[in-house]
Amino acid sequence: MIRLVAALGLFLLFGVANAFDHTHAAWDALLKRNVVLVSSGSASRLNYAGMRAKRERLEAYLKQLSSVELDDYAVWDRAQQLAFLINAYNAFTIELILTEYPDITSIKDLGGLFRSAWKRRFFTLLGARHHLDDLEHGLIREPGVFEEPRIHFAVNCASIGCPMLRNEAYVADRLEQQLEDAAERFLSDRERNRFDEANGILWVSKIFDWYEEDFTDAEGATHGLKQFLANHAHQLADSSKARQRIRQGDFEIDYPEYNWRLNDTSIATNGRTRR
Image (cartoon, rainbow, N blue to C red; front, side, top):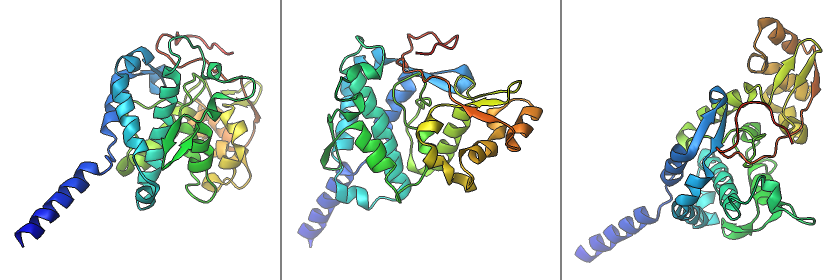
């Protein structure tokens, strides 16, 4: 009996010690220390130099992510899985940047003639080798799994044109609130989305162009992207008149050039530099 109790105690201790931390505390600490909010909180920059100085902490967190087996992941609930994948995408993206930082001005610098940066297979997740496109398009956007368009406001591609890197980890018990807040901040950012009332043009991020199908059926937007944007008029425009025009569909959609410059804290935040 004593041996049975002792064995059970060791089993429980071992299980607790090796359980995945769904608070993502290590990642959360790095983000709180190195993410700087700009544009009244609707965008952010990352202190890559600070991340590089504590790179061993980032690598330790990445090892935590890589240690999760597919069988363990499969029994997590939906929010735990999605938070895990969003954090993994953002963390591995930073690790990719740090392989060449500070000799880099854009994530695109890490690509080549025949392979983009998003096709570099450099990490292990859920028991397999992956690149960033696997993670975003094969896991996060896999048809019939999450069907969550707001992930486009949460995953960060290390570029100024991307949605902000949040200054905290995504966590399962607050995921709905965090995703809604991410959408609010992104859509309210006039650097990425703005209404030219004089010409009736709603300038929105090219993310809406690249992933239009993800937004087509979202929130009852059965008539396509234009309806999705109309549903978010209160975030996309500042005046009541402009918001009313957007709600009524009285606008054309256009897309500014995407800014692929590295979202480093060393980049000036004033002005609207486009590449």
